[in-house]
Image (cartoon, rainbow, N blue to C red; front, side, top):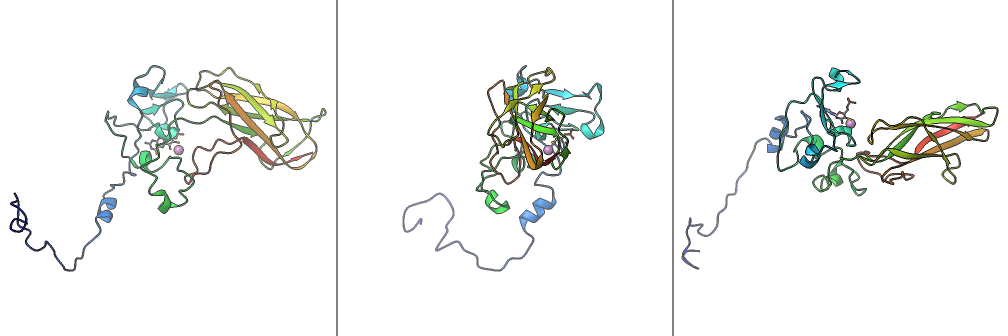
Length: 259
Ligand SMILES: Nc1nc2c(c(=O)[nH]1)N[C@H]1C(S)=C(S)[C@@H](COP(=O)(O)O)O[C@H]1N2
Ligand SMILES: [Mo]
């Protein structure tokens, strides 16, 4: 280049820079993986600094649970509690907090607990989405039917009803739940359930109960759907995602026999 084109400040590459030979050795990825580089041997998560600093966020470093010291299982001695946010971010056995520009590189922040788009159908097709999809934070609105359970046989009361009970949780900080409805005709019509407790905070669940009229028979389904203060309401299903996280379709008791 120096001689043919123009003076350069560097080394002379002459005709070409090339090596042609045979190499042997371990893959770098195997070394990094065996050194624990994928960071799945510890558990980390990230929370926006704004949220951490806000009074409304009500994030605490919990020392107690239900008025007793934390049990080892639930994170003794210290565990982060972040209301409205997926449990996957509530680090247990806390030993380090860092304030940093970038999100945690931890495996569970980056490569798990993400709602991947439906085009990600296996590990291979998921590969290109992990970097693009944000980690799950806020929990969606949900309701669950606790009684009766799937496949149960339930007896009609003398007045021809059965009792249905469950719980409902709001989306993130948009609670409390304002309404829970139950359907015995696959969602064509709905009746309001009674909310039985005064929720302790906007984050808290409600317990609900309702007696619904049903016909005798088998293979019956009962559905529930909740609405919260923010106006969020459950849909019949959530979109499928590879990790199967964040499902918040209607509460459902399937295959009931009413006698
Ligand atoms: N250190 C640590 N914290 C953790 C986890 C973990 O594996 N390690 N799992 C998280 C996930 S995915 C959930 S759902 C909750 C479960 O909390 P629990 O055991 O109190 O129910 O803890 C979170 N905190
Ligand atoms: Mo979890």
